[in-house]
Image (cartoon, rainbow, N blue to C red):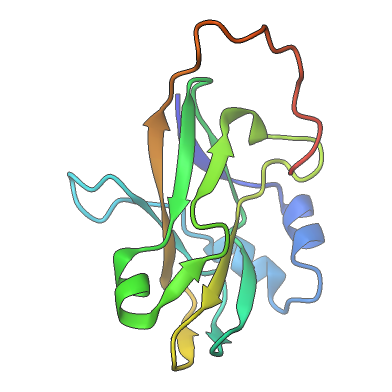
Length: 156
């Protein structure tokens, strides 16, 4: 099974400390969705409006976590229009969300998107605008790797 869901309201309040209208943001949260029947990417939407000046970066909480099968990963990437039209980049180039990130003890698996403006103009985002996309991918592991017994103990 794979699905997106909201983090708890308590975790949301903790992670968005300092923001206004936290209850409204939580209630208005949009689960990632695909724009067309054959789209691979699930669009993530901004919880609040913001401006990103040239050279600046921003860590954007999504209010979401994701459940997936143990042999799957969620890749977070920028939407092509963000990179092509505005030169907006994901700070870690590609976000890799492992299945065991879901419900981790530090932050319930709260997904963040960290963007940087490498363009020459200010990038303005309205509440609800698309700020990235996630693609589910199956992955393989080496047949001869030693048995791994470590469990995830934190968010990063």
